[in-house]
Image (tube, rainbow, N blue to C red):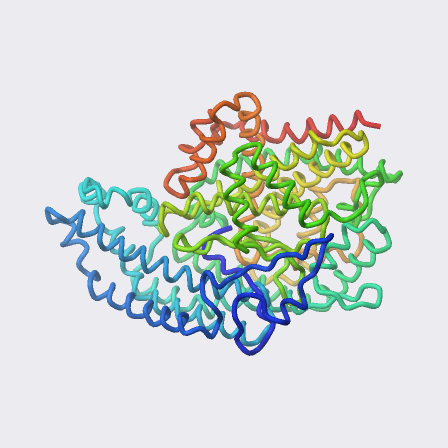
Length: 624
C-alpha cells in the first residue's frame, strides 16, 4: 500500500509501554495450530509512545523543516541559473529527502501503533498529536516543489546534467507531472494545514467507529474481523447469522457512515475543482502515473467479462451446493468438497517460503526476515484494524506486515500477498525516501505474483482430485474478488462521487447504488437478500484511498500476463522480475514491463489476463 497510509500496532494500555509485547498483548495473543502467532516488534522504529527518542525526533523535525525553509525558500530560481546550480539543488533535494525519511519514521510508528489498537485513548491521542506535529512542521516544506515546478524545462534539464542532481531525475520528472494542478502557495498551505481537520479527521473517525462496532452472533458480541471470517465458515447457519449481524449493526450506524462518505466525497470534489481535475478519478490516475484511457480500457474489459467469469462461476458454485442460486452470504462459502481443518501458522509460513524459494532463493531470504526479525503482527485482537497490509515505513527502517490470521486457506494467500508487498518494499528501499514508493499501478504486482507462486506450488503438490478442484475453485474466487469485485467497487465509487456533486446522498441512496453495481457484477446466481445494501460501509479503501481499488484488478491481470511469460521463458526471468521490483518509483510502468514484452496500452492486453481466469473456470466445469 501507499507509503503515507498510516496503518498499524498494538499497545493495550493507557500507560505507554514498550513497543514489544506488553502483558495485555501477550494475553491477547491467539494460536492457530501449535504455534503462537507472532506480534511485531516496533522498537526498530521507537521503543514506545512515551520514549524520549520520539520527542527528540519531533523536535528535530520542527527544526530541520524551519531551517530548510530559511536556507532555500525564494532562492531556487536564481541559484539554479548559476553555473553550479545543479550541484546546489542536489544538496537541497538531499536535505529534503532526509527530512522526508525522518517524518516517515515518525508517522509510520504512530500509524502502526494505532492500527494495532484503534480504540485505546492514549494511542489515539498519540497518533493524532504526531500527525498534527508532522503536518505543522512540513508546512515549511511546501514551497520547495512549488518553486521547483515554476522553473522552465530547459533550465531544469541543464541543471540535471550535474550527476548529483541527475540521480534525482525520476523524482523531479515525477513531481513536474503535478505542475498543471498546483495552486498558489498560500492556498497549498491552507489545504495542507487543514488536512488534519478535514479528510484526516474523517479517516480517523471511520477507523475508530469500525473498530468499536460490535456484532451480536450466537449470543456473543464480536468485533468486525471475526464476523467477516464467519462468512467463510462451513456452517450455513453461521454464515447467515454473521451476515444478518453485520447488516443490523451497519444499519444502526448508517447515518455515521453516510456522513463520513458524503463529507469525504465533498472534500475531494472541492480539492479537485480547485486543482482543475476534470474526472472524479483523475487525481488518482495522476498519483498512479497511469493514463485515464488505460484504466477505462481495464474497466470496460472486466465489466464485459462479468458474464464469462463471475456469473458463470457463481452458477457453477450454486450447482455444487445443489441449488439454483446462493444467498449473498454464501458467496465465499467453503466448497462442500473442500478439506476441513485449520492451517497452522508454521505450515502457512513454510508453504509461502518454499513457493518463494523455488522461484528465487533471494526472494525467500528477504521474506524470511519478516518472520525471524518480528516484522509481522498476525493475531486477531479487539480494537486491531481489520484486514491486512504491508507498510513500507521508510527506507532507513524496514516494512511491517499486519494480518488477522485465522487459519483459513485465504489467510495463507493473504500472507503470500502481503509478503510480496514486503519483498517489493525491501528491494525498492535502496532508491531512498523520494524514489522508493511505487505507483499503485505496480504496487499490487509483487503481492499478486506472490499469491500466484504459492497457489501454483499448492496445486502442483495436490494429488487428490477433489482437493485439486477445491484449490482451483478457491483461486478463481480469489481472482474474482481481486478483479471483478474491485472493478465493481470502482464503479460504485465513481457513481457516488459523481452524484455527490449534485448534493448529499442518503444512506438509502448509497445502498441503492451499491446494490446496482453488485447485482451487475455478481450475476443472477447470487441472491442478494435484504441487509446487503449496507455492506458498502466497511470498505476502508473508499475512505482512505478513493479509487485505489482498480489497482488490484490492474495488478491481477498484469500478473496473469507476467506469469505466462515466466512459464514460457523462465530462464533469467527471476532476475528481471526482482530488478523490476528494485526499481521502485524510478521508472514508469511501461518501461518496467518492456523487458517482458508486455504493453498495458494494447487494447487486447487486459483480455489476455482475464482469459486466464476463464480457462480456470473451463477446467472446473469439466470436473464432476
